[in-house]
Amino acid sequence: MTKIVISGVGVFTPEEVISNEELVKVFNAYADLQNEKYATEIAKGEREPVPYSSEEFIFKASGIERRHVMNKSGILNPEIMHPILEKRQDSELSIMAEMAVNAAKKALKKAGKQAKDIDCVIVAASNFERAYPAIAIEVQSTLGIKGFGFDMNVACSSATFGMQVIADMIKSGSAKSVLMLNPEICSGHVEWRDRDCHFIFGDVCTAVVIEKAEIANGDNQFEIIATKCATQYSNNIRNNFGFLRRSYPNGMEDKRDMQFMQNGRKVFKEVVPMVSNLIVEHLKEQNIAITDIKRLWLHQANKSMNDMIGRKVLGRVPEPNEQPNILQEYANTSSAGSIITFAQYSQDLEKGALGIICSFGAGYSVGNVIVKKL
Ligand code: CO8
Image 1: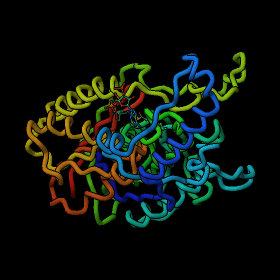
Image 2: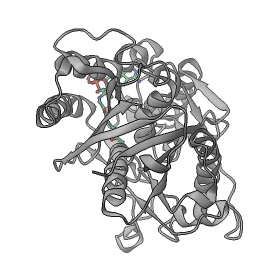
Image 3: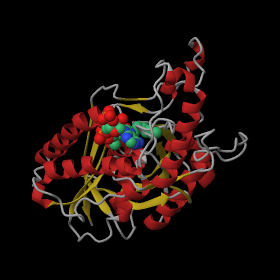
Image 4: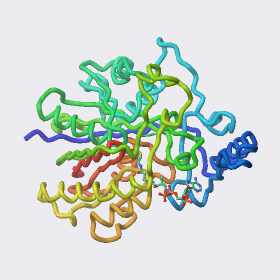
């Protein structure tokens, strides 16, 4: 049977950081501006005032302390409240490709590989800055990789679904050595003017080299033992921005549904059992005892959610090193979250140790990858 390994992982982290304190300050300044602007309507009871956000709430509800972003000046201006990114010429490298190339170089170095060794590039992310040409093909061309590339989107589960696709491709022989990239500019599609979600997301890009074991030579390799994906339709996490927008009456107006929307509480309640059941089922199918799992690299959306999943899967409170989190530093970076955690907390495992990379999010979608340290 073809043995497939993760042979290198790289992370590009944007330099700019926004603390909860800065975020709350700008949100409350925005609330003041809105409440001043609509003072008459609010006084007449025709409009609700915008309530303040709070650092205590954010930390308690999510565990998030700060987030990295591609541009903070626009987000921290109460008159703007979104990132300001320069418009690039079509002849220039696009911003998602630039992030991906940066992370890719790190992953290739870790894997001990060069562009000529890779035969497929997949960009798996939760939003794309354009419809086409594929960002993956732009990255492929920039790095000088032969073969083929394509983009795919399964929201927060893009990376784990990507890993399943790649493992299947390598098994079937359509590729030998694949570079997967997860550039996430969540700051571009979160609504910074909505206190229910303004604290949730950050920007990052992860890169993973996955290949046939016999050609791999990275020094921190993990065999992909098995993958399992599941989806269940839900409108509880949704973004309606798309190419048909201008066809609708007033479709291009700045409306709330052009950005990320969610019913967080429902997502929490419905996704926790979906994820823990899938992990337990997958381990059963693979005849792997729960006690053999040494680490959970979970999707990074919410600390309590991860604590609950860890407890349900292991049947006890996980030790901090069994289920590490990075969301306090990065916030939710969609598909990249579990991969950042894997990149930061996988070196110390002993040979033969089993672990799980698991992501979950919009769709709903859950992707589970069981790996073994080599
Ligand atoms: N400050 C103060 N109070 C607040 C704030 C705030 N910032 N926000 C909300 N409140 C208030 C609410 O109004 C509410 O007040 P009241 O009780 O009077 O109605 C109260 O606090 C409690 O609010 P919630 O019920 O919303 O609070 P929760 O405890 O549920 O926490 C969370 C909210 C943190 C959002 C939580 O529900 C959560 O994390 N849920 C899981 C979400 C999740 O995992 N989603 C996955 C989505 S990510 C994904 O799939 C990727 C999509 C693609 C990427 C998109 C990139 C942008």
